[in-house]
Length: 360
Image 1 (tube, rainbow, N blue to C red):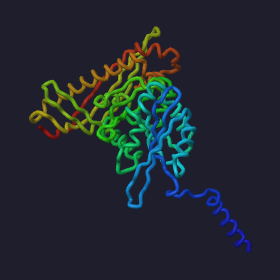
Image 2: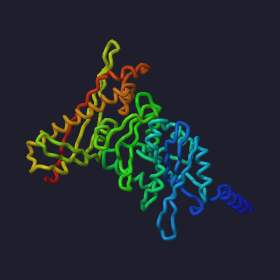
Image 3: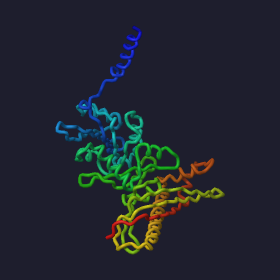
Image 4: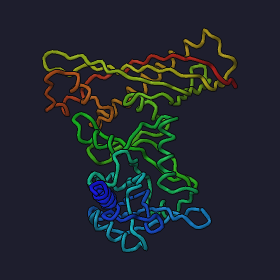
């Protein structure tokens, strides 16, 4: 009898979660996978959400809902009023911020709303869009959910090209930590497709500049280690070379000066890659060393120019201040913003070409 009573108790306990938490049938909800925010004025914005609608013939229609508001949660309420089913954010993949919004109003308030949403993970993708996200989401045609398409685009460029890895977590870290400024991918629409235009640079939460797509390698080589980059160079002999499978790592060497003078900083970049294509004839072994030296010179020149422009603007996407702070015992960073523009930052590149590929 005791065993029977125990069995009944266990059965009831196992059923309680199912009774307390009603199931949400996929056909009865819309799973929002992409969100966009557009500038209207200093007080208002247009919010757009996109959710896939799975048709009986197994095709997908991306449904977009837009409305203008002054508050994030007010906007969500308005969008719910337009939808025939609840809009849930548990599968959110990407959030796009209109460039004008990022430049004029900043994006922290919109980031903050993501932080407060328990259904949103810290790894979702964030990006700036050069244009109207409302128009993009209403007109973009893809064979997959819009959010997944854009998220995969960012992953592809991060894993097999030169786009630095970013997400909600990296933006929050760069924004709140001392001695570093955030950056996010900058996207644009071309021929009904989305492409990477470059990297948006921030001062606090406002976009102030960009690094074009063709120069992303130099930025990424200073901010992250990576293994599958791509590098193109025009050589002194007017030939061109494309290197792939580029593995790059960096190390900071910080030397402090007495008398309160700014420290001397060297960023050591190690570069290994394969010449996938070369516009000239066969490359003799003796010329490989010369190509390596030319690539080293190119990297040192381009990264130095980039660093000087960052110092002039008073932004620090590379995290120089963060590195100084963490390599200095009892460091006082109260005056870092005044010191930073005058810091001597050098880049030392060490390039190794591992193989030679196609010759043209």
